[in-house]
Length: 299
Image 1: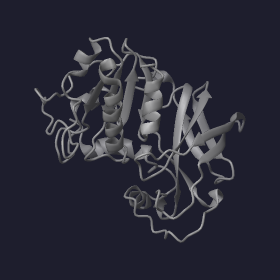
Image 2 (image 1 turned 90 degrees about the vertical axis):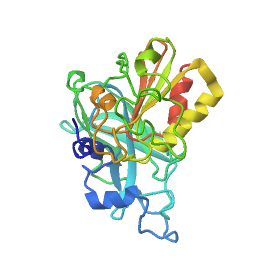
Image 3 (image 1 turned 135 degrees about the vertical axis):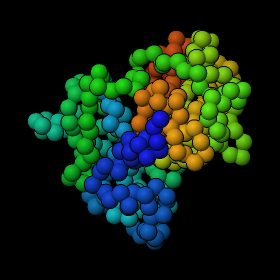
Image 4 (image 1 turned 90 degrees about the horizontal axis):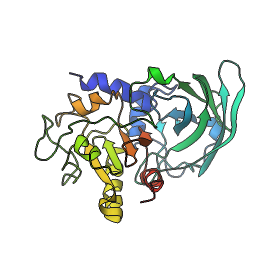
């Protein structure tokens, strides 16, 4: 049995608690209670800090590096009173050799349904190692990036098959109460198990997250986005949602999460009709990124 305390330690890395910003400041930022007033003018990027919004489960290949911006008051929100850029540019440096691995990287601002904007950089990294993401005109320290050997990462990777599991359903909660923490009504994505969905040979969107206890503020908007997508594409794709915890007090991690070897939340797995994972979005993502991933299936 994994407790919430043990599990949330992994999630904290995904919201930047391991960065140079104080942990207490980050908690203030996550609650959207920055002390900046709306009358403050735009702040230079160099005066801000980069907050890694990605867990340390990166492997060589196409790597997604979402970051947010913060000051000493915490993570900057959409109503912090700071004029935030629509696009950030950056380069990736090998931390050991100082070699430029990639330059002219661009990331657009994402905040659809979210209070804390983020900028998801995408870069191809060939080898495991320690890297630094340097945002142009940003802080000199940049953001640390660790890329591991694929054999060191236990969670399902893009390109692999999504492993099956008898996830909780309305008919069989399998010890998870409630089966869905969406309010005021549960979502409809608990009618069949993941094992049953995989047997239907259809693309799958599998959200692993908890609307009531989400550590990144992403879970509820992501779930609402999936509900809207289902309205537009109908039964061409199967949508599933499973909760992170077995209880409404968020005390114990659910078996479905343990089966995925996840130590952070949330995540969404997008598969093709064969069950192969074509995209996995970790920790923070908005409706635009979800829609873009599903659009690649051509449904």
